Length: 282
Image (cartoon, rainbow, N blue to C red; front, top):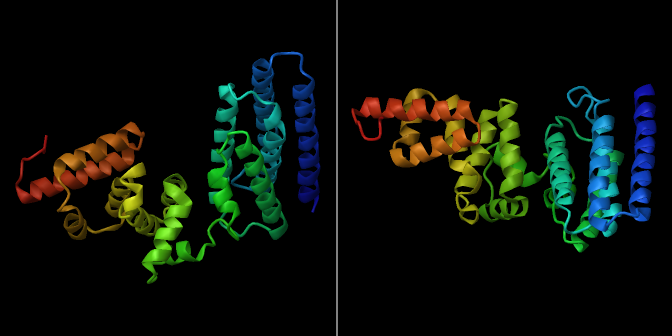
């Protein structure tokens, strides 16, 4: 109870700080561009100072409250921010990305009142920001339209390998988009849910609308390297051309996915040795 009261008090204090920043932005004597730069800098400092008080692995709820308040602050400030200020786009993108990562980390259902506040705030903020040419909250809006982060019926069926209508799957994938789905898969892998990650990555890789975006196929193969015995793994990768495999490995390395790149490299090299094929073995 004391922790909840402390969190609520901090959220109120944070709102006041953000309101002060918006007031300063409105009455600034600087050019709109300079005032926007100052606002973004001060906004980030306030957010970092507040966020350092909480540990997401112990209690992520106060951080979700923080992001909800911060998102509304950006929306309220947007009419007074210069469209030429690159920092505005950067702040919104990083705020959205950080909030998405936090949400995907929730292992339990978010309390109803907090989730409803988040939903209404994101929907309102997205509408305001979009009116001023900013669409960075799109992925957050997609989550906010659900009853929970991992509660979508189609997603649950995909992860549990249930038989599911193909049209429903395609509708779900189109609605979520490659970026959000990529983040979901990465989170599942981080939590060692490799079979679920493999199912979702395979589904995304086979979805024509994505057209190879976000390297879903190599991610799927990386998952297989973790969960399949050697014979089954060799069977799965036998149709993949080695030049394509090299491209996958290089792309993983460029994204600093060294472990995944090494796993794929080992798997394909074993396949070449077992087949007695020197093609691309170098």
